[in-house]
Length: 485
Image (cartoon, rainbow, N blue to C red; front, top):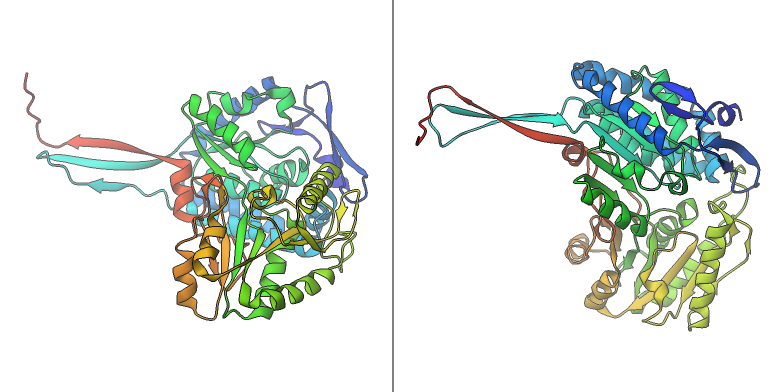
């Protein structure tokens, strides 16, 4: 595809240029193994170039009328709509995403841009009273300046735009570092979209590089005031530690180990459909995916029979085939690691209710039951097509099991009594939870984020305004203050 050759560069200060590193990041189609592109890595010197460019450009951008700023996002939305087929093909090739997954990601991405148009107008100030006679207190909401964004490989277009677009809309400059497995869809494609939309040069910079080359330079650099990171809790902990040592704010959207709970009065067929999508969307490479399906013991046998049968019917294979529902994992290491995790769980006493083969990056769905209570697999995020079925006795045990994890991102409760579901949901330690639905949801105006090891801070709507702006207090004394000396 021409885009992979055209966009195999760094994008710094409004210019496309080759990185100055001594090695290349090779972009691979995870299904075919074909080489899509080779990008010479950016060095720490180019990290500095990118941040300094964003810093310079941001000064003028922050003074642009917000009504004019939002026109950029209107045009960016049109670019995506006009080139949707090309972007779909890029998602399928670089991520191994199915056609359904590509459509889902594009829909979310367009919603982000629509919301960015509104965010341009929502950095509102306030006037507050003062106990001092004659004094007026004004609170101005201002851009933080420059935001550093580090995005993941699973939904790279959407999860990059989710931080990039609002940060720009609120008057900031941005430097984006996409995941090295998805440098085009998660990085340089976004630069091209905004370039075509007329974003002034220097405001958005994209660096394709790796920690092996730049170390912590991306986080430690003095220019960015906020670091937005989406990825694993292990890396997120490191990002938070380094950023805090340099007095930077962080927004961290990290991993999950979500539970979908099926109560004894649930519609089982509907719960099966929700659970299958919640686990196997994009091969299970979704932070909100339902790793664990907790089922009331009174309906566990029937639910599990239907659940396994539906999973067994899913088509695994080439993501370019419109009939494929489960494509490849992002790389062979991910597939091998997850397969080994399943092997260890079975050796420790779990029962494989459904299991096929792992061939290269393709992994057939796995359903495990009879899992020992102390099995490590119950505590971990499983970033692939593996699901754990765990029976419970009563609501208290369901809550205990759901909360027995270091993560707290999403979840779901299925029940015939909505208010019963809400009462139970309030006891689950998650940032988000859904009644009679799946675990995978992200809406542009609803705060998105997790508890415990699943992250710090929230994005979307007003939460995004808080994340990418700062408040400045300016007081005015209209009379005369009295000073004690």
